[in-house]
Image (cartoon, rainbow, N blue to C red):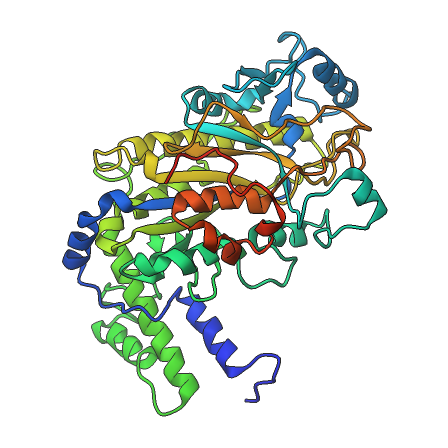
Length: 482
């Protein structure tokens, strides 16, 4: 086998190690000792949960300006006869949207949430949720004139799903290998007894969690995914010797380096699965309660909300933080189908309901996790490819740029909107085309505010967010002091 200079043996072995979510930390954990060590610094635990809305969330239908000029413009451009508008005839002049009153008034403005976000309104009103206005990928502050002139550095490949998902999660377009969640793990994961459980995805593989040293560990609804047929069932091909034989085959290496690395990866995968399975809380009675049924606002049908299930898995792992010896953990969950070019009203309404249902469930679960309120130690924040256009295509919206986002948790300075909420309409100073917003807050600033709460020193922020030095504000103020 020939390994080219473009994909070295070292990189190949690193990729294999990534499959097991491993690092050089030892896997033969003494759980009792780890639990004791964690108990001595239990108050020092913190977790960040990235909730990625894949596809590009329509921010104009999520957080709305309802002062008379803004609402009139919304109805003029969104109430086109298609499904793009949330306007509900017969439910009042604001179409059933849910008014919110930020603690910091913005002169002449009033605001509301989508009708399906009632549980998020409760979190907002209760002071455990905040809104950060007009966040987007930026390299440096940009004016509309500079954008049009093309004489300032801009993120490459704007409005492209893959590239902007990558830029949100890493700072670079598609092809990047390290995300800012992973970089946080690199800095702070050394405080964990086992760095393997620093960056954990309860969804798919996420660039956000990939670090320079820390590699993400993926879990499913049942926890760590085991290697099939060696999980202790005792039978393989109808014989008790089968499982032992398979384990020996995949765990024994000769003199070949590649074979040895493969075996090491397998052994770490087996060990980490065993450790996590023994540490995380059970699902259901006696552990982390199962999410209540989700009701589709369009059909009234009940179903399982997979986003809530992902957050249940996160809660179960957080409940096992003592046994894992974890002080800092970064998690990733996702909700898809936000690319609402069509059937806007129906599809987006359902997505907002799923988002709200999951966030409310997670908040209630963390409020009584093992009899304790851990909400001050866990912060959940939303992210997405980009916002969408304000003008409608008749039945939906197209790719945009800046967007509003939610931050939820007990350490959040809630019941407020951070950043200047943009003018509603077309042709204003932030309209880059069809009402798509030129961001006024960068992802770097948004992430840096979370990172400082998480424990990253101001002098270390540039290691996580290379462009943060281009912005005058590194802390947007929506988190309590660390």
